[in-house]
Length: 415
Image: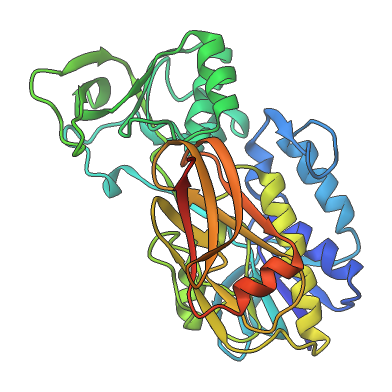
């Protein structure tokens, strides 16, 4: 029997595997559907990775190579697809060798996320060539060596869209603008500065694409409109941009098929699993981590979360108690979500809560409250949805939160 099976050989999966081995887990199997390890990192040729994990700035492929080296010697099944994970922790797989099942004592799911396509946002207009998700365009350029177009318009200010705006320019293309539906960017501020401002690319906040034109079966331009406070296009605000390529960076969705098949509870906000502070799902022994749990800003943060998850999985395999009944974490007052969604009464140690606010706010305290009393707070001059926030409570304060009948994470204005 495999003691620990990790589904996904990307950054989170590799980091979890290496950490589990350091924690004494001897029988580990990593399953990756691609022919090589590293996941999305292999197509991310830009630098900016590894500053937190390795204290060094690396490109995506360099970062993947470092993680793969740390996991060297661990059994890895590449070109292998996981078809299902059962509540009894049996993992059904298929590869060129055929169909087979692994039986584990614990499973960590680190399957990442996927991009939201055009069909999910309902852009009207022609159905023509030249419309890509930003990640697809990134793969075409960086892996296949194919430039998907010459003149780009980008819808959505997610980090991959911002990075692809810069990449298109560096490859000799032209970028008309980046349009963002919301009145704030969903990307990191450093990416706005480095990828848009440094190249003179306009960022149109509170704007969206309202029509797509084609000529000869290929995109010839997009109509962009300003939207009101209810995100409805404003009549008379239309502007036409001539372009041959539209890139979509309109959100990432955790891969949840295996979670659904296993019967795990899902969070309607994160669209990933609902987990306790060990990152265990509602299915005993089934853990979830990385962008499959909730979408991260940085690969480094996903890897650090994966290392934490691996420590908990090792404790679970060793039979260590995790505490008593679950207590739900409620988010109000401008906090969009927090992970974990449940705390275990009687659990010990410090507590790390990851959260996002619903809209950009200034001069606020992010407050953790136990039965109406503030236990811990963190001041932020500016908090934005594009920047994940972290509340790290020392053990004494974490214990007060875990013991509460009602746990609330909220925003409190500075007095």
